[in-house]
Length: 436
Image (cartoon, rainbow, N blue to C red; front, side, top):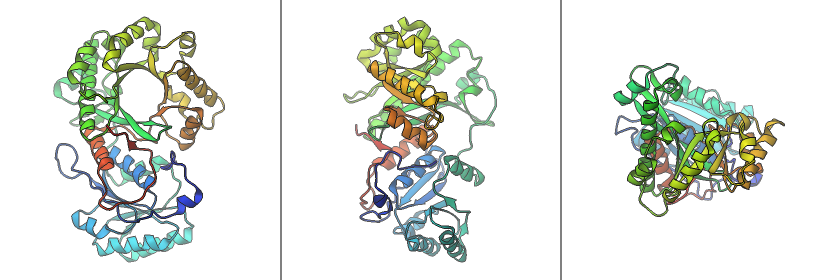
């Protein structure tokens, strides 16, 4: 379920209160991807700043720009700048606020689609919807809060907004590399306890001219070792360069990149990091994720890499950890800065009586070693809340933000770090960048 206030402690009274200064928070994003034509645009109108920000995170993840508003103030001015493709409109406790927004959209000449969102009774929803229809707005079926995250994705797919999802298909990695089809997308990494964005993990994608966006499963299985090494080197240099672009926005993020063991032993990791890493004192460094099945049989390599890369602020993490628990638990110390819980353990850990203790055991093991515990594949609010209660340090997953192209991630950071046109008193949120 979408629970944007997942990491914000608020009372029931605070949840229903209006912001101290309910003015519009209009935060336009620059054109996407190399100055090309405008990406689709959505207005998000909601008195809850966490809902606004969470919806914006989802929308940016699939290539859609957003402007956020606490209420109808500023809508007319925003519509004069650019008409949105879709408007998300919450119906708060006082439905008059939503009705005023509907009127502002009509007066501003907007004739597009409006997606109402609310936890109010059906009679109130029907009343606001009918008023919108009288104003000649295209009113979509109401979304009742709370709703599943995938409902938003289905809605956008039905409206053909945002970039299309990754498709099935197979291509040759050598060809993808030579044709320049490979690019790297970045997924937010959240400190679950501090409620902050603290990192980003790189994921390879292939942008095929006819097949569209392809996942690694379409081009890495069966690839030559030399091609995987070349891909890993690209991932490493791209992540380091992207970290610098984040730093220029004043956001200090630790980058993470997946590298297979065969590439780790062949690449001059130290030379690459020295050549491309951001040159400032507060750079939080780089995490190299290695798979459990590849690294646990050769822990001597892990210790050696840790020793050689430590002075460069580069550390190792075990990806999809869990099955090799017994092997690692026998050690007196661990060469890994992070243990990333296998997603099969994370899914439904908030309700499954078998998975919950498994997650807690891995988290405790990580902490006993002085390592961080990271959960990947978080898709449900109940699982995220359970992980927080278990003491899990870091989280990634669809609930917190899906992988997005680098320029979209930069645009999202720019939106988060740019001051609003009018000040609004708002509580902390889950994606609060840590300053450089």
